[in-house]
Length: 331
Image (cartoon, rainbow, N blue to C red; front, side, top):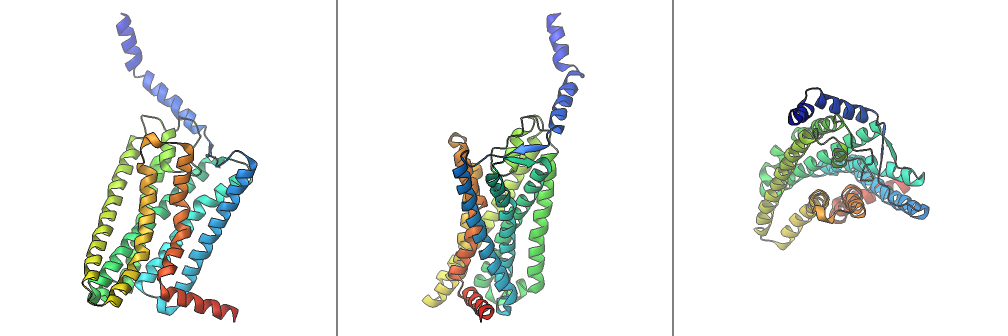
């Protein structure tokens, strides 16, 4: 009789829905999240504010100059610089999604992020990062065609083709983001409201969801990782073909020119991929809130600020056009 009584309690059709209803009511009562703070003392909070302010202004200046230069100088209206303009727009968007809110929290000694503000931050951050990865993949294809199939460059990468590829990258980012954001924030939250990061990101939100409800989003993340790995394989394959073609160039000057057009993109891809891989695939045994904060800064804040420097150092055309525009403004 006792065994039958426990069996009815554990498997009763009234028992599980009641538990789930309680969890849903807990999740519906959450109106805000608490983000992870960089520091507890006022001095360190202000240091974080000024440090992020400097990085943010550097990113705005660098990417803004690239956008202005490419848009204003007709000599830079080529596929390579068209995709570079898209990359700078996405960099500006991604860093503007996370850094200003973090700066405001440090300045006002706050950790609060509203529920819908968190959802909006996840949406825009994932969108900009996904679209940027697509643009970086397209840029690898651009360099491959320019070096390995130069006679077909005008045909494969004409004006309409470039616009279509850029539009496809932005549209893919939107579709990808809608899928993940909707699926993440439709999950009931029953593990509190403390986000273990300085901004809202999907893995941290999933940690707060109910154990029986987040598996679908985990499956989508695994599928996304497979797609991202496919893009990475395409980039690696493109550069293997590029390096083989460059090594066959007889003149040293030709090899140097070919390498100079590829190295900035390769450096940006390496920075983007290495920081993201380390952030999401590091061993769980190395977990610590401080390390997670540093790693998150490396893949969310540093690349948008460093990318303009990586491109401007190796692109003499870009530097000449920028210098010409600055002279025209101040003369």
